[in-house]
Image (cartoon, rainbow, N blue to C red; front, side, top):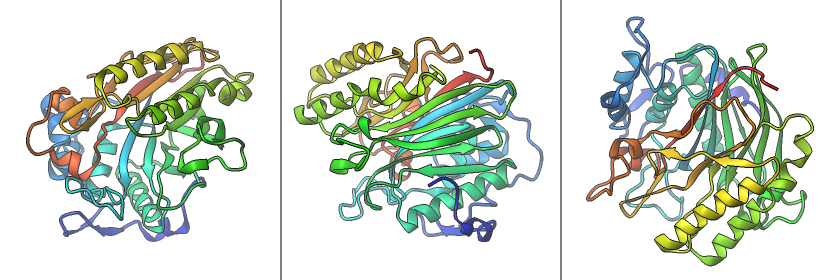
Length: 368
């Protein structure tokens, strides 16, 4: 369902309990007492953004951003926000995970300045919808711009869903649909969430700038699991990219597919490298032909202290608007430089996600 419920109008000064149990106002959390000079954050500031909510707010209030905004650039990202907003399965709480820190999450969104963010693992329960409404309100109050959230409706409310957050003052997203063929277990559009898996989450993107960029956007979250069965399910979905994108190519061959592809192999490093190689070779052959953008640094997820590359950005080979190659990884993955984590996980792992955001920049002009 696109947009928000009427609860937004009642949440301009919305408050909620943060993970520490202190009552805070998301809408006023970032109100500055002066007009800061917006600047690109050096590595020291980026580390503070992902150190704690308080440190993130300080950086944002002082004008620090992932990149200085420019009118002719769109920023598109993907982020698996673990079991949003619970932080872990409701019936299987994880010791190293806490409920999503909404105040901190909102601060990171302001800092990253993504115009479009594809999100994995959002629930669609009343609690989850209310949490997104609060985040949207806070973003609007802080940026002075209009934000929207769209999420897949199929599947159980307490299961994983793919959704898209976007700045409507910068881009318009339309023609949403679930691409059943990108769920390896689905057999038709009648049940796109067959087997508890996710279909592709499609939208057409049109920049508000004229003449601005326009392209097809598909969010993915493929089957998880370090097993041969799971690898086969992921490969089956990738084999259907041709079928999924074919209806859109007559309009425009600019396509971006991004999300958590769970390229974890079948339980060992060798099979993981093989799956990554298969991904690159397979999508290169799927019409209209896709490049896999390598991330910098080369991980987007941590498990048992080791960094893994699970989150990907695939772009049509002839899409000239892509500015950033490689894609940029931020979050604690960037702070650690993908080195092995020994001892306690960073606070961002506990209160935000075990994944890190991956961001690309697009030249905001129509080159078709």
